[in-house]
Image 1 (tube, rainbow, N blue to C red):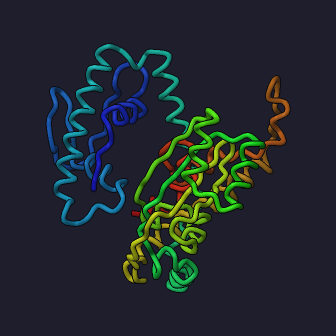
Image 2 (image 1 turned 90 degrees about the vertical axis):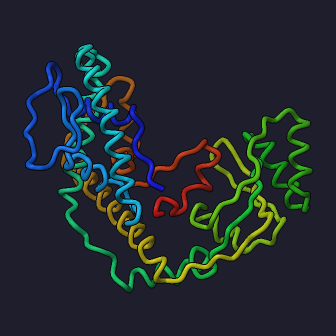
Length: 312
């Protein structure tokens, strides 16, 4: 389902494209006007710009998507007009946000340009990925999962592992954690295979229903039990667009890492003050922003929600 950007996101994007002070004269693209908003205009070009950056809109929903984008852009224009009238673009906080957005846009543009076009994955690449991940495609399932999430200490983790090793049911371990005053989260959810991490999925695909698995994730851990499964295989033709997108994103991520590494190798970087010890830290922030898929949810959910769900 197509979901337009929130008004807040659109406003920040618009301010990032506005200079400090009065709004600069815009170079009008030779295109149709989709709507006039007070003294401003929304062009078809602006609508198409948003649509081009919205993945996988079904052809049957294009017209509906255009209308939703236009309404969002109208909301954006109204908010921007009010912001400029109140001279919010001169606010220190807004100016910092605009500058941060400008730097990120420029960094992204350079990395994308330097990385060049890698082309689409080959048929051999697609077939290889399909064959190597039967749990995602040929043997794909819909999983009904119970997740018990809790904060860990070495002693608590060792105790849970010992109980699982002795075949104790998850419900009994949950009761013990609650009795000990441990804050416990989680619940029951239904997830298709592509919403599970590629590390966890092969394990869940092999375990028996009712057999709990322990997933460690930093300061938290989760006991995940497969309550039920429903087979829903995906043939290679239907899986192809998902696999191509995943492999393309993977190529971008690798390319970005290489580019940033080359730039760092050539640069003179000196850390100072409290950051003097930061030289030993390997930075990944830009790589993650430019090429990695983003995952939403609480920290306890991230490890089981990565997968290739972003390909849908």
